[in-house]
Image (cartoon, rainbow, N blue to C red; front, side):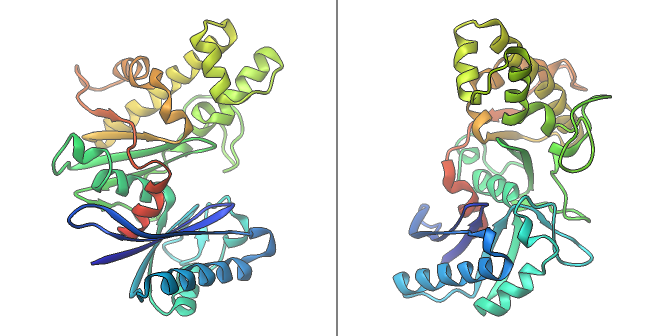
Length: 298
């Protein structure tokens, strides 16, 4: 059985055709530009172009395509909301794509797709068989997350299940693009760490460089990383207290930082409603393919 998936980002749209059995195999993988600056109708045209190329190269015809997008579908109006790809906000993208591509479309938030992929075919099966709850996190430019329960993505009544990055983490903090202040995202995303470091030093440098300086013992970098660890611990403990996942997969650029898997985990314990912490903290296995593979599994 073949599974078709598309992962839409701000700069590229990636499509795959995969086969799950006897082992995961990517049969076709094609990317085209999103080109969102030309508007919504042009983006739909890019989807059409991508699917046409996949059809031509594979000789296959899809009856269903899973699509991962930045943002979610409003449960009442069925239009896209909460997306950093501005041109798709307020658009009935599922119905438009179904008409354009002449097949059934299932759409989910890109973090949900990441969580689904790692829970089903990625790192989680290497450690656990049939886990009940997996929490997948993308810590990068923003903070997104998805919840997989018994092998299925949980979307929720409003389509915002797993939007952990927009829980308020402190009494006061930086304003978030969502309109609230002190969101998790404003403390533990890459830009949040970079902003804190700049306030200390006047230097604007990537998070990877800040972490390198932390490993060398620079005081300002150490303060920045310690602040990340502190708020990571508080934020993750809230998740564990609420849904008690078997495993947490940390994706995105910050998910590569070893400090989160040792000092970060110890910080979680300080806020946990339990004496021990048995939740597995795992690095993702599928790399930048996780989102599009997760979409194919929808």
